[in-house]
Figure 1 (cartoon, rainbow, N blue to C red):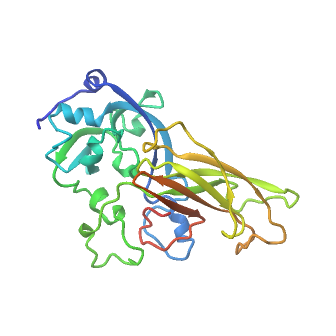
Figure 2 (cartoon, one colour):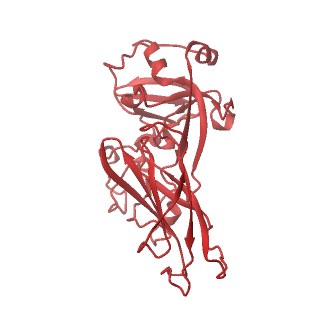
Figure 3 (cartoon, rainbow, N blue to C red):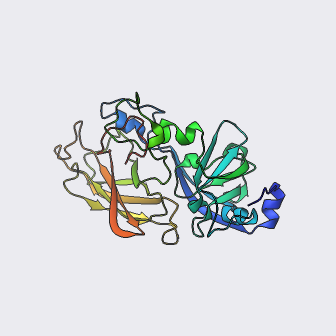
Length: 307
């Protein structure tokens, strides 16, 4: 392992250019819905919009680390840090992800076919597909191999830990004993109709649309929509991108024409409503994960990784 100094031009000319389309999502996405269940969480009151998808291009992190003398078979470190030009922000990922031949981690200098915009991290942004957006550090100027994960609050602070739902206060809690958030669980959301929309009773059905996504490259295999609080379900049409199995980093858009229950048959507390659940594949087993919107979940103080 050695110190390696590279310019932006070096990244562009000395390493093959690799392109990946991936979804980035804040761990606190949909926090406002947990608040609506009656208990106050901490953090920004996101609805369903703390998520986005783009095409990124740049040098593979694996290639750069190998150039610095790190052996993928015996790396000699456990974590890789991304240090930005806006200290004290930095974050890290496990070296196994950084060196994964199929992990698609990038030091990106392009976004959607153009030069990476300044607001999105110019000149270099770390892209870590399938992991929480906080690991996709902007304005990267140093990459550090270490046996410890990043010490920053965005890595070790309570906001980026997967606490149990029974934690109602952080008093006396030792966050060092709780794993930092990396891959995110399956997630789904309704984009249309918007909350509190009015739909004519003359309509026989309503077109319901949204997105579904899972961390870890696990693809969405099914989305179901209900109009009776989950008693019955309708399978949605998936609009999947062309992605390799186990490397399905981008969200799946979906839509379904759902019959309108007349006479208040929807069972919602304030009238008829819709719910959605998504199922994702699991590369290591045949298990299925599910998420529901509105969220049928338990309360978590920081509402991280809400399903």
